[in-house]
Length: 92
Image (cartoon, rainbow, N blue to C red):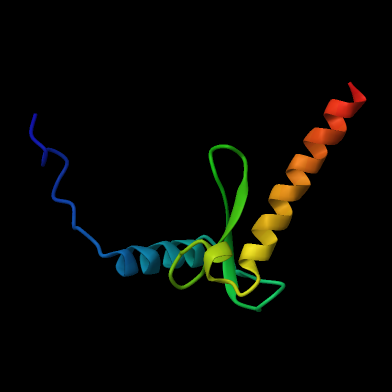
């Protein structure tokens, strides 16, 4: 069995791969959503863990890292999760 048994694979740059994935979303009829803070187009992706994360529509970078309020949003989400854990622990 060789590495090329299933054909040659083209190596894409990150920019080309992001453009292909954005085209895939468009082809599947998935319109980008808008960020509430900066109005940038984003795609929401659900990870294997079930968590959802926004990604920039053009570059597919994690929008929490590129948004002007992304760091604050991530911090709030972290604090909310830990607050829920503390409340559930106190109830038990």
